[in-house]
Image 1 (cartoon, rainbow, N blue to C red):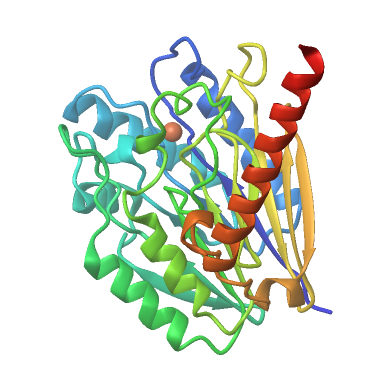
Image 2: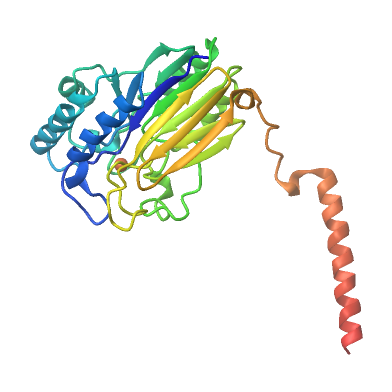
Length: 305
Ligand SMILES: [Fe+2]
């Protein structure tokens, strides 16, 4: 059985080292990543954005070029996605010129699967935050509607809506962890009749969140230190796409592994029920329990007198 192997690196954050982002380690780790991709027999490589820690337009162009150069050691075809830090001072066109590839919405068929490069708008407006563009949602809806094979959808920003409790950046800034209105994207995914898996970066940790049967994976940043006692995590991802399963692994100091049967990812769940206080039978039942509990308290109060 053919298994397509996709090596993934994300949130490289080449540039100045900060309290949690160990940018000084990015280029040597990218050399290791190129060797990892070759050793794993990767058919394709994905880079999911935030290649740099931005400073100013001139510095950012240099940092981007250094990342491009370091990834030159990757032999497999490589596809890039812009993260928010790639967009603070540089346009999509400037990034595309440096990387030597267009950075628009695109699909690539590989090994029985369709890779969907959902390069949605990743600019953080200041003020304003992320903006979910109707055109990006509509494009994805058309791809999902036309799908005749399993879909692996890749983006910088995750859309699962997963909890950020414990996340160094986002526990107290959850609004910046995803798109406002990401539920619209999940509604599109819900309409899929083929297996679907989603891979994203941005949140700097390894997670899987299953929504409507669809696994949403996030991969740890190459240079993140908040989960690894201040040392760069050195995380390399590997997705294995088979006819009957999808596997996701993170290699490095923040290891992670998860495999799901593909049939399970086509099984849409019951739509969530209404709020309890809006369900007629539930309202009556809750009132009955409340009356009973009130009586119990009264009885207990009398017994204590
Ligand atoms: Fe990042």
